[in-house]
Length: 516
Image 1 (cartoon, helix red, strand yellow):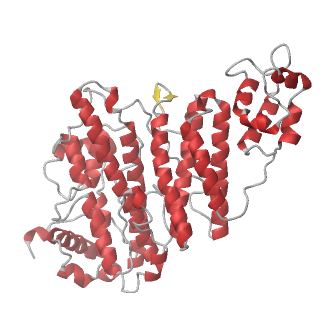
Image 2: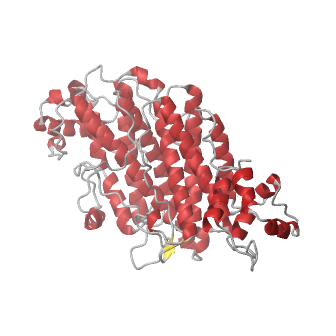
């Protein structure tokens, strides 16, 4: 055995997981959570960057065009990794896992604590360190900055290397033959360390571990082509090993494929290289917006900003629900719809990130909160899952209508009107019958709000408050005028204004879709 293969390799202690299937489960669940956590952190970092139009220096403009491309490319690949991890879970008969950091976290498996933060030299150092191969040369200063910021950094590559060991036989690890000598060496080193921790029989899955019938539920690149991701499907041991190696290769690059890995890209972004400008150290120019770290909608004071942040969380919840549902059903038509809706939500979140970056929060601007929905995981049966999807979509529609009614600036906002159209179309395709019955009606709840003096006053302004279609078409305007916004209060002084409860009833009628 070559001398370099005898180097000491430290691995997390998995002795509490005695069987190979137990080790596969904890490693795959952790891999899925790490991929999800890295995905949202990389997206948050990308969305924190200013646009090139916000600076005048040509070099800075170039940097602000290049850096988001790097971050968003890696984020798309992380989405493929996340879906591949889900497929590996399904392949060994486990449920999908869309957690981000399970509690309590396994501190020797997670790379570092999740923080949504604007991109900085410190956060970029953490990304370099987490994606680094073992014993990387020439990055001691980056590792030092990363550990100063986050403490010990655990490499993501160790998870996939150990998965490579678990999904291999003992004989195949020894023999190699993957087509990449560096990858074969990684597996041999990790297997040697693993076998010192516990018997080899506790580390390698048997031939019956992978269930090919789960292919009907697994994600595939065809369904998700609009997201620009590569997803591996797992029907046997060879496919599992190919998927694990490809994810490891895209992350830390422990093979001789010549492809640029996440580690390579982040290192170039940190130092500069291959046409990518170096990221500025503290005290140099600031390329990011003044976004919060770990934002929470409930901490936002400005009402309009809070409504947009809450909308972003509703969309994030829909996205995760669509992904999990796609992986829990084998119906081809439903799977196509769910994947398409999930891809659309990815683009929606990007649009909402741009919108939030224009809205005030504290002394800066707002950002995507990425709050996990409750419940996170879908119910056990198809009817229950579709009911939850309908409830979430209906809630999103109601929130958008309330946003349109609450502020004149949002009454004709294209993002909101587009979401109303798409959500209404999606709702019609969801199983489970008609949407929940409304609690208000025009005849019973809205028309009695208007007194004869109100009706006469608005008739003079060519608006018939007794006409359902007229009130529906001008509902946002009426809601604003009832609140004294966007013009003279309705009804005008000295007449008594509607009470807060009456105005809320009118807004509920709007949110429920103007029931007659």
